[in-house]
Length: 281
Ligand SMILES: Nc1ncnc2c1ncn2[C@@H]1O[C@H](COP(=O)(O)OP(=O)(O)OP(=O)(O)O)[C@@H](O)[C@H]1O
Image: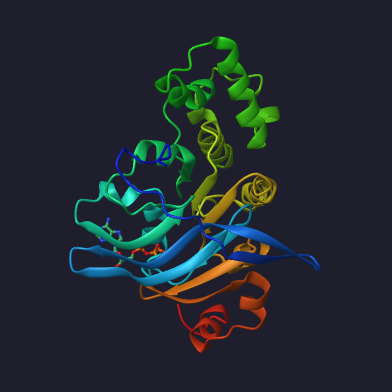
């Protein structure tokens, strides 16, 4: 069977069976794996930026990627929706299963993949168009023309991104007139309009003030009800606040991956302890 992500001619492998136990308050809840990564390696020419990384990301949860600058967090994140394909010197080897499909395979339909696995970048990057057009642009490219449906999508995604109340009376003004925090929520709304299953957030709040940061964190918490979120952050307090699981990267390797409270209070590896206690990085 082929899926929407695959061009014709590839066998779909069995979906990952191993469940992952999540802690929510006192009650452990078992959540299935949505991304199963096996021996992933990413190179930029001779630079082996991500080295033999293997781990499983549970669905409808928040996974934080932490580690010092240059350790491969963003490179790993970009590999999940094949954004590294845009970097000619990058090469990826290994396996990353999503719905039983190896996303590293040559014949993945990357446009369909990027709709299903959306990405929001560090710096808010709205189009220099109206708020309304920022949301409808990709929908129109996908053939949605009916005004009532477009209106509905705009309202829905702005509500999901907790921006509707602030912009509903000025949908046709420029997105560039919004504050940085509002622009970032608009970028999240724009991604949500495509109904993604997974959201990749690359330091989404690092350019924002504390109030806007708190709003983004609140939003992440709400969105994980229906989405899987993978977030790169340099802010360890933020990782501790928003994530269920945390992966600590160092020099391209995944050093430790655990429930966030366990990793921060009782790290298994000395390198993790040194990093979270500020002894290096
Ligand atoms: N577009 C690129 N072209 C060439 N090398 C790159 C590119 N992007 C990243 N690298 C290299 O890959 C390695 C990992 O970088 P990456 O940006 O993934 O790290 P990071 O952990 O996300 O860092 P930061 O926290 O500073 O964003 C580094 O050695 C970096 O120089």
